[in-house]
Image (tube, rainbow, N blue to C red; front, side):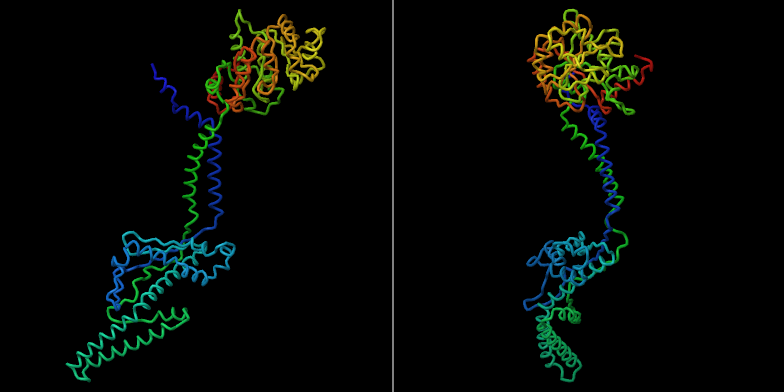
Length: 555
């Protein structure tokens, strides 16, 4: 015996049924996603990325200060990671960014003139990344103009290198030169004890001392300059001391004008759009299924009500457009259609529900809400019964919004309301024959001010008894039971009630309320008809598959 817990678990076919049922939503999501991405990719103006590569030598600079050798790689100052992080921040620091922004006149361009914070927007186009396991930094600049992107990248790198030179040499170089001078003076003092004034070594040493003195004087003049632009120009001054490197940063590879745009990456965008659209559509389909609280298939009914299931009717208009009149008498107009066979199948289920001890002659047709196909269902089942050589009477008990007289094109001067409100009116005076053999009609009559009270009168029982003597079946069309009490009142006198539920419209939660209404009315529920079954339903799939293989002339 199968484990009941395992038997109730979802199977792969259940998920496939959901996807088939919700395929419209999934396909719409997929198409929308792909179209939006494609449109955006072709409309978007291309963005180009230029790259400049910088080399940073941590073992440098070999610069002497008053306190000794400066070793930037020493743990006393920076760790490897911290040092590179600092250089990244310096490259994108506000002074450098503002200077480049101003030099290229970006504030006047359309792209930045409309921005609330143009500098911040410009900064977002710049990225600095270290190359793993190397001493290289890569500077990326993005711009819609490829030539401008390369120029900006090179200018940022240039300013960064010069500033690095400035901040190292200006704080250290003067002390370095002084130390060099003292060292040369000491060496001169030692040489003077060995060589005479005219000795070549003495001449060379004095020449070196004069050069250092000149450089010290030049450095002092540079230190008092107030104009930063002039200071930056003077940074090109070359110091040729032996073994001295004035800067540990250099441009390894200048940025070149990019040929291929970085964004949009059309092929990648299309691939991502297809993947996102596919999986997103599937996810959205399952989410929509989860949020859908309506009754769509026969399986949904079994979980919310104990009412018997009489059958389902596929949604009409699957082919060409049909009029409401054709829908109401579909079994008569297209008797060989599979939908007509569905009504005959329901007719058989109703007949099997009847017994010798509890015959079903008077049946009330109602629905939870309006526009669920209750009247069309009643008419077609009535026609199916009449085609089975049964004498059938259709009674329009919806005295608020009657429709049966319009379906069969009859007058509605006198009808059920006339019989219930007048003692001397007989059934024979109200009967109207239709164009369909064995099918008769009693219209609603003039609309009374109190339909519920009129249906609750003892005359209703007289009407049912009189009709039962002449007809095999009496089918009452009533207002929606969840809205009005008319159907509940009438069901207490009839032999049974049939509930017509529209697939994909009726909420599951309303079935419990309807069950209580019918229980309070002491009505006998014959069953539920699932109407307007959608083509994406698994019930519809198996139904159409069966009838598509049946003989064309089968009735």
